[in-house]
Length: 238
Image 1 (spheres, rainbow, N blue to C red):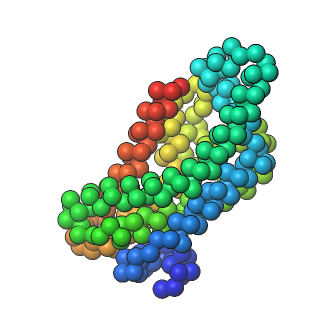
Image 2 (spheres, helix red, strand yellow):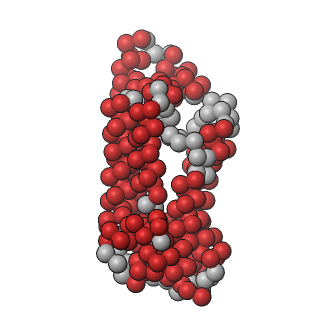
Image 3 (cartoon, helix red, strand yellow):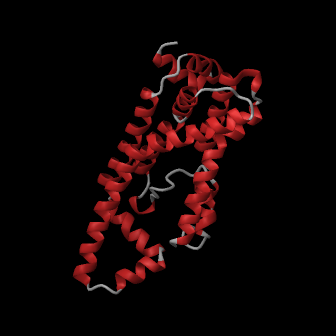
C-alpha cells in the first residue's frame, strides 16, 4: 500500500491497513499530520478566541488562582494576566509539537512491554508505527474542533474540551470534582477510536499470539496511566 492508501485505510479498512503497516513500519507522516493539525487548532484558538479569554475563565473557575490575582493592584493584575496568557499559548503550542512524540515513545515502550509480557512477540518499531497511525482520529478531532470554534460564541468555547463527545460534556466544569472531570474529558469518543485502532494494529502484528482483548488492554494501559496522573494533578492544583 502507498502512504495515501495507508492513511485512508486506517479509517476505512483498518485491519488491511495495519497488516501492511506492521510489515513495513513507518511513522513520520501520521505523526506530522497529527502535530500539524494540533498546532493549527491552538494557533487558530489564539487568534480567534484568544488566550486572554482562556486565562480569565481559569481565574473565574479556580478559587486559588482568583485569590492570588485579587491581591494584586489593578495594573499588576492586568500585566500578570497578559504574561500568563502569552505563556499559556506558547505552552499549548509547544506541548503539541514537543510532547506528542515524547508521549508516543513512552506509550510505545509501555505497550511493547505489556504486549510481549502476554506473548505478543512484537517489535518496538512496529508498536510505535501502530500508535502513530492509530492516533490519526485526533487529526479529525482537531479539524472538527476548529469548525466548532467558529460556530460557537467564543465565550462558550472550551479549548480543553471542544467537542461534546465525552462524559465531561454533561458535567459542571466549575463545581464538579476536578479528578473526575479530567477523567470524563479523557474518556473521549476519539480516544476510544484510537485505542481500538491500536488494538487492531497489535493484533495484526502479533497474530494468534495475542487475543484482541489482550491487544486492547495493552493499547489502553498508557492512556490509563497518563489519565490518572493528569486527573490527580488537576485535583491537587484545583
